[in-house]
Image 1 (cartoon, chains in turn brown, yellow):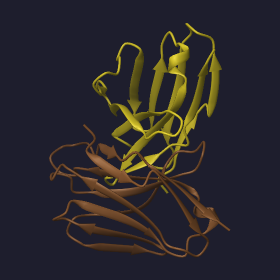
Image 2 (cartoon, each protein chain N blue to C red):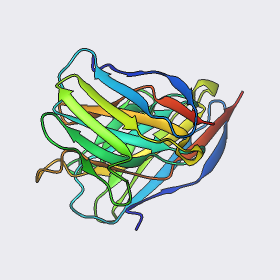
Image 3 (cartoon, rainbow over the protein chains, first blue to last red):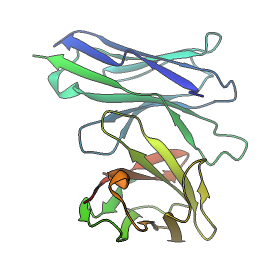
Image 4 (cartoon, rainbow over the protein chains, first blue to last red):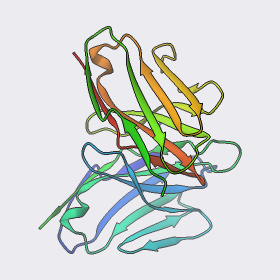
Length: 115
Length: 113
């Protein structure tokens, strides 16, 4: 059972455009929602994360929008650059209740930003 | 801060042999580390949770006798793939928990011939 559904599978954006990746979760016990960026042959790196007590979080060109009632969250990359071309993973976890911070990942989105 | 290293970065071994992969938290202590494997163009699949000083907790379907995990110190966890076979070829990634965040290592590419 896939608990975090991510879309689209791949995305092509022109330089300077906005990249939008969406995720939906099922488990209402999730209380932490990070996004990771992974380049080929490298480990994932944390980009930005949000908790359900806020609806939006912005860090530089990256913004997470969170809709608790719809159980959805999305990553927006403003002014997308060719260097942003990578695979992006959304994830969710329970930070309370002794979960050990185990992450459930989406299937990933391959972003290509054309120059 | 929060740097995690893995060694080796890549390894080729013959079928039937064992391979050990190290995961180190370089600038912090980690009670909890995780081990993942990732096939090409796929997501990360959690293999096990490694807790310092105790036995690892394996995910359903992961053979604990084949993938031996040892977390002997607060900065080091090891994954040993025993009697490796070509189907074990994959990208293995560890992470270490600090302040509620998982920090990932750079990964180890294992190829079994």
